[in-house]
Structures are given as C-alpha cells and as structure tokens.
Image 1: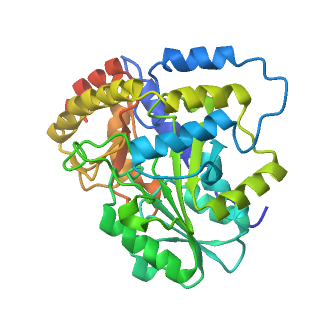
Image 2: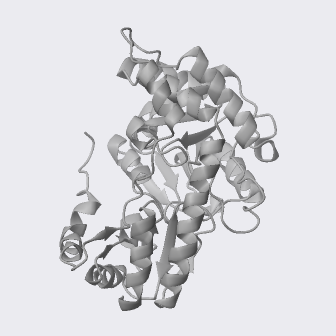
Amino acid sequence: MRGTLPDYPWDAMAPYAERARGHAEGALNLSVGSPVDPTPEPVRHALATATDAHGYPATAGSDELRAAIVEWFLRRRGVTLGTDAVLPTVGSKELVALLPMLLGLGAEETVVHPRVAYPSYAMGAALVGAAAVASDDPAEWPDSTRLVWLNSPGNPDGRVLGVEALSAAVARARELGAVIAGDECYAEFGWESPWISEAIPSILDPRVVGDDHSGVLSVYSLSKQSNLAGYRAALIGGDPALVSRLLTVRKHAGLMLPAPVQHAMAVALADDTHVEEQRERYRARRAILRPALEAAGFRVEGSEAGLYLWATRDEDAWDSVAAFAGQGIIVGPGHFYGDHSPRHVRLALTASDADIAAAAGRLSGV
C-alpha cells in the first residue's frame, strides 16, 4: 500500500444516524443510493438458469455478453464499438478505484476528477501514490495528468456535461497524453430540459470524438437502472488498445464477473422496459421530495439528472445533517464529496415510496 489511507468517511455519520434512529417513528435513510426496488424478474430468471457454472468465467466476458454490451452502446448511447472494445467489470466502484493501477500510474503522476465528486476517484490515486486534483476546468489540468475522470450525470450534484464540454475535456486530455474516462452510470435518468427529451451524451458520442476512441473510455453500471447493485454488474467500453491492456491486467488479477451474472447482465442490457419503469419510480419520488425540501427552506442546485437532490440552505452541511437527524432523516453531508461543497447535503431518491413520502411529511420540522 502506498501512503496512508484516510478514515472511511461514512463512519463520521454514526452519531447522526443514532439520533435519527431515536425518532418516535423511526429513521428514514436518504443518505445512501442503494436500490430498494425489485430486481426485474427476467433478470432473476436468467441468473437462476445459469447456475451450472462449473468452469471459470471469461474475464473478457462471454460472447453473449460482449455482443449485448456492443448492441446496448449503439441502441442506448449512440456509440459504435466492436466486441474487442468492451469489458464487463465487477461493479463500477472497483474499476474507479483500480483504474490508476490497471493503467500503471504511480508517484509523480496526477489523476484529475470533478471538484464535487464521489471519493473513489481520489482514492484510486491514493492507492498508487499518485496525486489527485479536483478540477472542472481543462485549462487547469497539470502537465503531470495521466488520467482524467469525468462524471456525467454527476454524483452527488446531478450536473450534466453537454457535447461541447465533453469535447473540450477530451481535447485537453489528448493534449496531455492522458487517458480520459467518463463515469456515466446515471445516464438514463434525466429530469430537466433538455435531458427530458434528449439522451444525455456519452463521452464516446460521435459528436464528441468522431470515430476516434483513442485514449477515451466510458464506464456504466446496471446497479441503478436495473436494480442490480447486489450482482456487481458493470461495463467499460472505448479505445480497443486500452481495453486490451485492461483485459490483460484483469486476467492476471483474477477480476472475473461470475458466469451466472454475465448471463443475467446480457438479459438486462437487452430489455429497455424495466429501465423505463424504474425511471418512472424515481421521477415520482423526485416530484414528492423536491418541493418538500424547497418548502423547508432548502435550495436545490444542479440535480438536473441522476438519483440525488443536492440541496443547501447556506449553512454548514453538518448543521443541516443534524437538523435532518432531529426529524429522523439521514442525509449525506457535502463534506464527503470534496472541499468544494461544505454547505450542501445529498438526498437519495433510492428510498422506498413510503419512506420518501414520510420524509416529505417530516421536512416541515427540519
């Protein structure tokens, strides 16, 4: 291990969670984006029918799965890839944390990530002794940059990068000789114009990169769109040369998606109906929670897409967390997402319908 790793940030939530659990009507946890809705039945059936998995699974993914990923990229993301340019991964968090290692980064090199960001981007840099720089401005990225992470729609702030912003980021990364990876796990959930009617663009969109995928990767997860968080089903696609390198290292490291999960994942990728149904669940929850937050004096910022509401009432985030806990509601403090969001809190739309409705009812006392 290179360097000293920080404490796990969520451990700091313990006293606030304890206070919330003391509420007369119990705690409502809106702090963690773990799906609560059922895994689609066809996907569960696919998993069950593939349990005779006596041999080792292919690290590259089965022929069936690679074909499903390629077809999904074209159908849902407007991106044309070959089967040599895609890989399944054991969830997306392992890829985010391990990509600097898989690419061979080390000391004296830099990983760039968004200013307001999920902490695993910086953790990936820490694991290999590289520097982590939080910056949304390509002009600020240092010459030592070897990996750039974009996140659109963003976690936690729900911001979307359009074609122009993506193009500028790709151009700068190529100028630096850096790999650029787009974490696009929330791309099916656009809530505000123009993303209600337009697809949220991928970093591999032809309008961004043309037909040249060199140095560019797209990461996606089925955890939220298909309620497969427990399956650890995710994927990566892009530059075939980079994918080939990642495949070789992953073979050495034994990073294989279990064969039954590979089959279930292929079935999930081919079915858009359950994704539409899940989008409607989240849309309905958002329509209940957002006005209740605003009525309680919070201003919702960003949040144009994704599975969270990013809110502030211009006080320290820990004060907001404490106020929510007093009403039995657990939320995430902006401090967990870097140094640039100390006055925001994150509320997840992944709680049940009943919990979202109950939280909206309690917000008048926050």
